[in-house]
Amino acid sequence: MRFMNLALICFFLVMTTVPGHAGEKHSDMPMDMQKMMEMYQKMATPGEPHTLFASLAGSWTTHMKEWMEPGKPPMESTGSAELKMLLGGRFLYQEITGQMMGQPFSGIGIDAYDNIQQKYVTAWMDTMATGIFMMEGTASPDGKTITLTGHHEAPGGGHMSHRAVWTLVDANTQTFVMYGTHPGSSKMKMMELTYTRKH
Image (cartoon, rainbow, N blue to C red; front, side):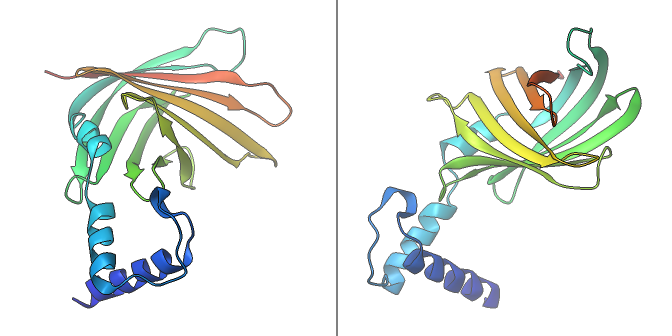
């Protein structure tokens, strides 16, 4: 109960201090407790984006292409991925194994649709780094093409910026294509990951 009370207090503070919440007009008057509770429940309820995420749960085979330099053929490898929903259908979790740059590779990701910010947010961690890579973005009207952007510190200094296009092709196929810009270089296609559902 105290955790629920803490969550409600935090939500109340956000709702009464942050302008322009979820497309509603900002008011200087604090909400009453009943209205606050109703808004809290609405924002915490999974919607259509979460239902689409849930349709991806299951076991997948992956085929990865990596471009290390412009104009050169990609390195290719295969792997597998397990996807499932977390916390009552609110977040999509994936665990992927395979190879990257010729080395054994594993990673985990959590994908979300934030009802308050009305955008997609993803967090990624893998064996190629010790940080958490964050991206955020929006989807096409049908929700099946999600475009994400993010950046992170580059080894040796500077930043790398990224744009990813995640396409839910059909019930059994999805692709994740990432473009990146290294410090002092132009944007290039870096990775293409194709998921095929196992039967």
